[in-house]
Image (cartoon, rainbow, N blue to C red; front, side, top):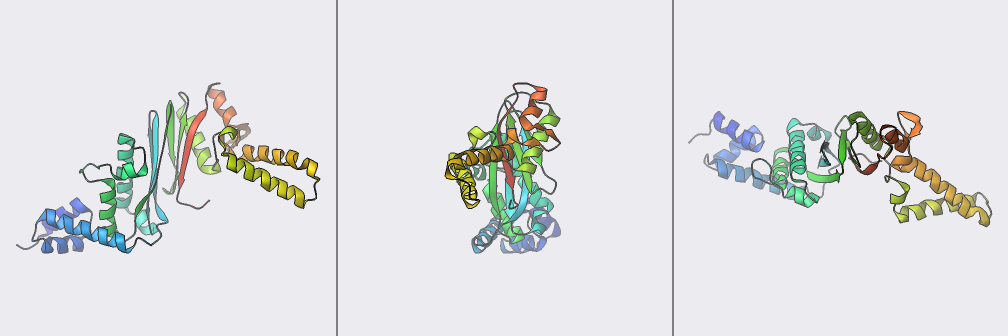
Length: 274
């Protein structure tokens, strides 16, 4: 039986593959749609294996929030051309939707989660590899939980943030904090949450600079402590100056709404090196 345009169109809707790939798969499968889909999937697996050593540095980053849960995902590919493709963005959105619905604990759990057609997120990514011929991978999955949450996607789909709070918060205030995380890239919510290794590294850098400047040994610890406080001011979210009003810290901005309001967690996902 000859392959018709209707058959090709139907398989293309099922698989997302190109017209010629669908035509060839149907011809090879004798117009059996299940066999044709399997052919397309095997092609994706073959391409994935062949391109496993390639670098996937482009992609699409999306985030969402609902009530006390927010998540961000990054689906990575090799070129910006593919990253901007509507079907690639739609696949990223489908994976994010599953993350929001199922709240998986890990990236591997998300890859194993079924999408609307019953096939897993990982299988859909492999199928898409066969369509584009590019390496693809789920590069990041991050989530936060709290009394309330917010998400922010920077224009261009290369950077997103999610933030949780300990209480109810006005939307614009929450969004401002999420944008602060995107713009200023803090290392922790507060000084208490900065890893001890980072603290010691910052203090040692300060001591070395002081020694090179000829400062006496008995002043090194005081200089290191001062440098650490400056680091906290610049690099911890609650102590950072609010980018929209540098007269306020982020903590002061939050306390203008509610004296007990604070950030409990944040995640920042980006495809850019910063």
